[in-house]
Length: 156
Image: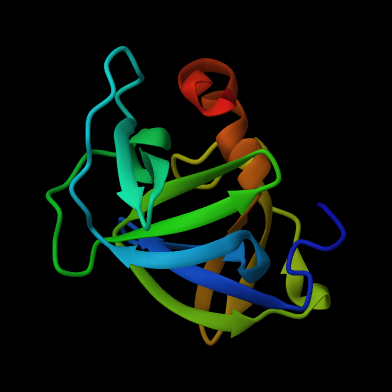
């Protein structure tokens, strides 16, 4: 587990299927309602395309498809979480963005050997919060494969 997964202890909680996941607040630039997505040819199925967000072309990944879950229709609660890493900005389509919570480092546990359909390498830990089990994702590892395989157009 990385030392400062939650930095100041704040994470954005979002939903995929019936499970809740979290990303550190400092990696999230914005949470947007769905936009019109322009498809980019010859990318993986989970790369939905790009959007023009306030003048910035941002690639969009369907996190459900990235994690091998079935695709669902866009609903009123569907959101795009714009995440920022030093080398890229990417939008992640999620079923819903629930809330921001404080997760003290001592409440983060090592992930179990298998969690649903998510590859254990993408997980920094799990935490229990008000009778909820929240999976803390490692954004760099989630996006690593995309940067190498599908999002090469980001390197411009």
